[in-house]
Amino acid sequence: MRLIRYLFLVLLAICLVVVATANLDPVSVTLLPGELATYSGFQFTAEVPLYVVGFGGMLLGLLIGFFWEWLRESKHRSVASRQRRETARMQRELDRLQAEKRRNDGHDDVLALIEKGGTR
Image (cartoon, rainbow, N blue to C red; front, side):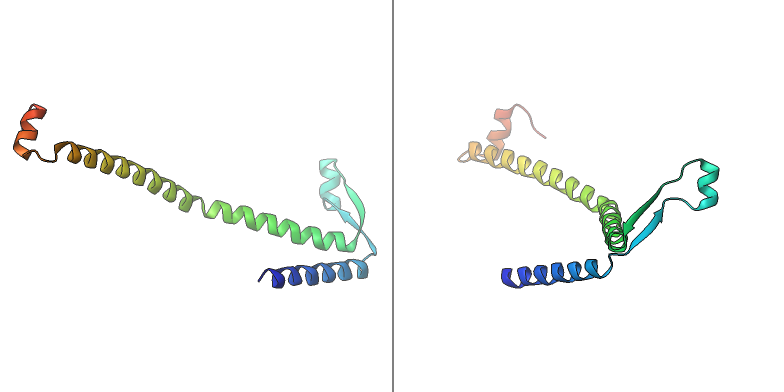
């Protein structure tokens, strides 16, 4: 399985290099449209190879998708955290009850209650 993964990564890298070398022509990337840039007083333009625009768009899409998924799963993480705390609380209670039972082994339940100092 590891060999298949490495083979896939090598093929993907070769494809990305081929796409990058085929798209070396420079393009002008502008941050804001012309009218909005003059209104805001901020203009940013860069000349970059076309493959940078394509790969940058893919990378930005991946980052937005990861962030969106992280937000979507937050409710599941909070439920899991709450369940872990509840499980730990129940385990402590079980341990306490088992220790109490071991102390009372060989004693009558009524006598154990009397020794505690009260009845229910």
